[in-house]
Image (tube, rainbow, N blue to C red):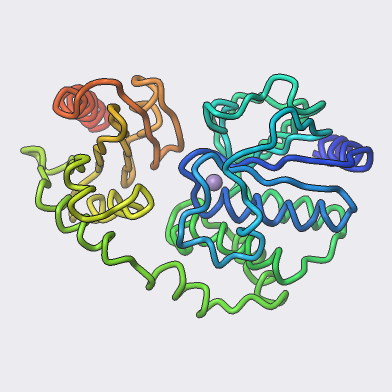
Length: 325
Ligand SMILES: [Mn+2]
């Protein structure tokens, strides 16, 4: 671990300009980690650009630094460093980012177990969130965590742990939270922003989606569908669907929940499990990936075909899991 921190330190010391990149369809961890890194690097005198192919979801725009995130980069601009946060694979940075020759060095900071180690420096470890890795690094470097950094890291932490509900929540998570609060984070204000500030479109699309709910005969799998027509009718964007698949998983007895979403001629599949099934294994069958209990994939089929294929696989995994107590 020390070697990785030393390598990062060395890389930061010699860098004048860095690009920090989040993954596509960014979540709170990706945005919070990106903004936090931007503050830290700027304080070291490094010029930073921030890039997110899909921009910053509205719910995270209040975070300090979010205004600096760009969806487009200057052509031919080159960087000393590319810092990728919360991305398990270089492809997760988006198909519009031309990585070849963009930076002299890539630092990969991520907590996904299926990370492909695509960086020149790979700071990849199990933890609740990428934010927790950044926090550990700042502690190691003895960097004082200022409020804007704390706010970003805190939002990343609560969103990736489901507000301390998921299994990835550990003693370390709460120790980090303690430090974030000491640095000035107002936890009530932030919880309200994140959990009690929904758009009307997100409630409308939830109603539409839940109307399509289907449950397997043994009641262990449940899924719903969101078509483009439904999105248009509700005036919803992708970010309005956040949390929907978790709602489906919350049904008593349901082990695997799936949300199918039509998007630009493809189907985005979001998988969640409650305890026994490793949904990242299911996602991998369709060239996707993720975590044990939260994963995703993109299929090029029409939505009905995608549904058939994925649910068949889900039922197979569910059946297998009953023998693995
Ligand atoms: Mn994460």
